[in-house]
Image: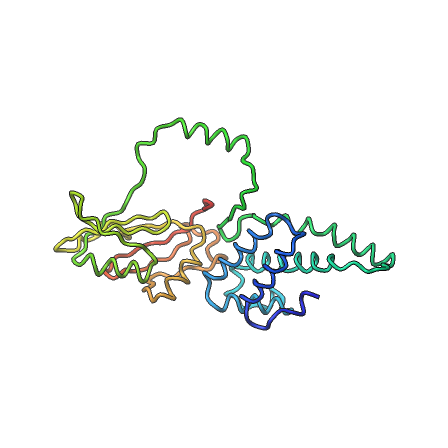
Amino acid sequence: MLGKNYPEHDINKVFDIFEEQINKGGVSDKCAAELTLINKLFAKLPPEASEYAMMMLHGTKGSELPSDAKEIMPLYVRFMNLKDYLEKVDSLRTLPSDPTTEEIMNRHKIMDSLEEHEKAFGEQLLGFKMSDGSEEPSKAEEQNEQESSSILHLMNASASVFPCTDPIRTALFYEQKLGFKAAHLDDERMPHIRLTRDNIAIALVSSPVRIAPVSMYELIIYVSEPLLLLHELKAGGVKIIEDLPEAKASQGALSNRQFVFEDCDGRKICVSQSSEVV
């Protein structure tokens, strides 16, 4: 049985086993995309998250996990759903030469249950969704796309401008600690360093003084799941000056669920949860 081959602690080996089973065929077309999404989300989280998943794999109930695991319980549910699905598919690959009536009935029961597992494949998870290219757009989506394509967009993108006494130093901080990429643009009227990551762009310009902010934050970054980014920044040694409240504690709050970090120049940057799917 597939479950007997799982290691005690190495989740990467588990994903290798899952991939091997998917490559054997007989699974949903969305199964590979589901594995990729789950794998990428675990890679963004601290090692403890993967260890909790391994505990569930070997029999620990979700209710028995530490409190810090409860916030990403949907990820564990999808992980176990994929595991159960692949185990069932694997069991169906072996057909007894002279099956009993009970074995035949059990086989049909397993086959009927696969569809329930497949319903979750490709659905949003912790604010993220991966497309396997098999979904056809709805009529409403096609109409919106046609309408938007007929409009001339005069504004393509934007970038926040950060005055810096030492733009090189600031650029290195954003590259090494925050995962941005830097491009030095000296051929424009205002020479600057352009920082980019995902949909965020920041222009660093040289200034003899740091201009004092006029509000609480100098930049607000909207994300679907702030917990993932928070763990990434903490692992990189970024100073967190306002931590992220737990999801349950945020229910009924008057403000968005958010955390605040400080860059090397003392800027306070807010990371706020957005309900929009990315």
